[in-house]
Length: 265
Image (tube, rainbow, N blue to C red; front, side, top):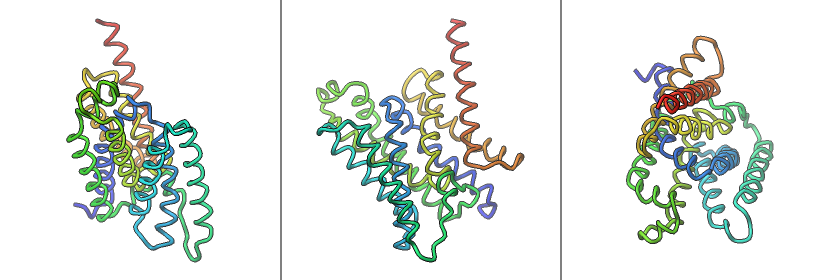
C-alpha cells in the first residue's frame, strides 16, 4: 500500500494535520502566529546546515527551530519585545541560510520544494519521521493539556494553581519546533503556519469547549489534506498550496455556518 506515492502523501498530510491541530489552537489563543512564522523561516538555515554536514533535513531544521524558539523565549521581557526579537532572528536566519546554501559546492537545492513543500515526494522513511514527530507532539499536548490551558487563560491563576507559565511556554515552543521540522516536507516553510492557524481558526466558530476545538481542528486539517491532494491530482496544481486553499475554503464555510447558527438562536 505504501508503494503508492499518493497513499504516502495522504498519510503524511494527515499526520501533520493531527499534530498541528491541538498546537494550532494554542497558537490562536495565545496570538503566537508570528512566532510560528519566524520559527519556520529560521528552519531554512537548518536545511543549509543539513546539506553542508550531510545530515537529514529533519535533524537540521529541528535543531535550528529549537534554538530559535528557546532563544526567543529566554530573551523575551529582557529589554526587547517578542515581535522585535522574532523579526531580527527570523530574517537573519533566513538570510544566513540562503547565503550559506550559495557557498555549498556541488549541491543543488530545490528551494521551491522547501518553501512550498513537496508532499508527493514523501518516502517511507519520511513517513516514519512525520508520524513519530506527530505522536510525540500529540502525547505531550495530551499530557500537559490542563496546565497549558490554565497558563493560556491567566498566568496569575496558573501560578496560584502551582503551574509555571514559563515552563508551559517552553513546552509549546518545543512542540512548535517539532511540527515545523516534520511539516517542511509536506507544506514547506512558507505554508506551515497556515496549517497551524487556519484549521484552528475554522474550528473556533463551531466548538463549544477547548477540547472540542482541538478535535474539530484535527478533522478540518485532515480533510484539507485529503481534498487538497485530490484537487492537485485532478487539476495538476501544486499539492502544498492546494491543501492550504482547501483549508481556507473550509474556514470560510465554518465561519458562515457559525454565524448562521448564532443568528438562528
